[in-house]
Image 1: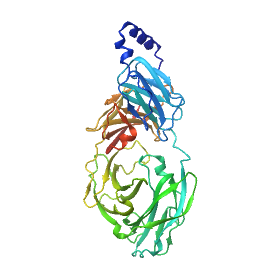
Image 2: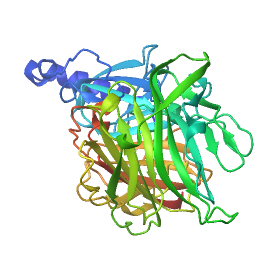
Image 3: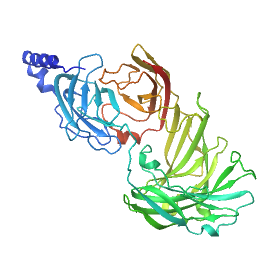
Length: 462
């Protein structure tokens, strides 16, 4: 890429030659505004654009990021963000949608095609998984665990203890590594079996105001040592709300209260048939609380399973709602590989637990994902509000994130030195369905409107 000194001079000359109304008077001189979580806003680009770069996990500013503005293949405007993550670029040839590429040390390169806002905030994902996530270890027990009725022959009870998640389901703090346990059990589990009764759990939790809770499961071993034929049924639930967690401040003696059997209800979930090309399906019911985050309670792990038991929306949960999350993928794919083909459905605001919960249809996957002569292309998904793409190396590391705000289905990437694109990689293309105005949005708000997503990939070489 090259600095566009020639274009700047040309723009200045044109402004002198033309009447003021054609130049400075029509500029959009919006004050810089950081859009929380990332986004676009404050009117179309006209002569100026304010670009903020932030950490996609923490929202902290990313200073010294290199910004390249312009369509790949053309000369570009170049600038560098200051310590607040901001750079303001003035140029009379900035007019309407443009392409913005961001390169920052320690972060995945990002390109937004068709950005058209006087203020643009681009969140960057760190190249390495975050370490030292804020957390603490919480120890305790489930009240009345030893008093539960003895399991039937060949059965045993397990209480899986967890913590409530944030609304950003991809947030690393929602997937904290848990402490190791004893007797072949994880530390965040209680067990009641013929020869073992134990309920002294430890769970690593995120910080903030959280709920610590346990889903109590009856596991039927079918009288065999192998677990491949085991079945399970949720028979109870225990919880403690409003636990304040501070980073590094461990707690003990937390007691989870079991709810009455009558406070549980069976929920029927209608999961659609698998989309073409995918062979594995799962679903979860999550309790969406106002002040304690999201409690991932009931898991549908068997395509033939359509009923689970969850807490009623009464008592401490009055006024709360459930969300149902269904996901389809391929059984042999690595679950942590964000380029794997998949389709996801998210249904929020469920308050009627007496009727079947119909998830509708899966969002079809993008198709014809390809790279030819330096051009990336795909066939879009009908009805999708937005498509994104990513370049993922053969060991699963994302090297480039791409957002296609202008609806294009074919694109080239700007030449960078060094070039982050490996010789062989997966081109992953995602589709998102929801409400989105590409000229005026905040990612934090858009996430709440997304109800279906899908992703496909193709192994390609340069």
